[in-house]
Length: 279
Image (cartoon, rainbow, N blue to C red):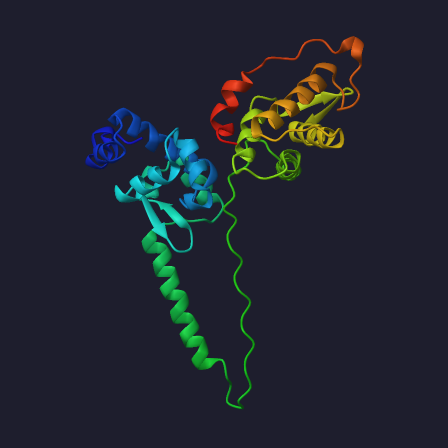
């Protein structure tokens, strides 16, 4: 957070609108910017649902109330294409986010840039209409549309393409295990995975952590586990994963004699409290 932000008039206004202490408003903005850097590095935070944004901001009230207040105080801008954009995100983004965008040939999104692009596109289409018929009256084929830039969050340091694919598969398996996609499931699983080493030993060989998590989820599904909440599904998966790590084996290969206690390397309840709220 930039120096002077806690005393900025817009921060004070946000606190008044939400009827909260100014320190709470500062924390909400800090959470918003951290969330944006991780999940919407171009600033298009509208890709997340309102309740997900509120969860990342640590706001416990009505998500719609928070979003409305952020828009009213001009911390968020509305946008037809991205729904919500972080106002002046390029001024708040840290150097790591700027480097990521530069390395991936992406740009910061703001209302002016998006609107300018829309006007430019409309002008191009108008010009194309006037020139899409040649002198013989034959209609020229329309040009292929340009592919949309990949705005997915940057993979973790050291994460390979195979690991990224495993992570996506794990998210899909988690949705199947719960029976629906509550919106915060992916975030909850990723938070849990951050507490596991990048590689784990199975039968003497090193394997990517997401491969183990993916197999644990598949094992839970095949076993008919009844997990209807994010908290329950991730804790059930964690029990399988940590037992595999303890015994250096795959799910379903647990030797009872060596099972031992689960590793409590992190507090799952505290880790998942915000993510599982309301699911």
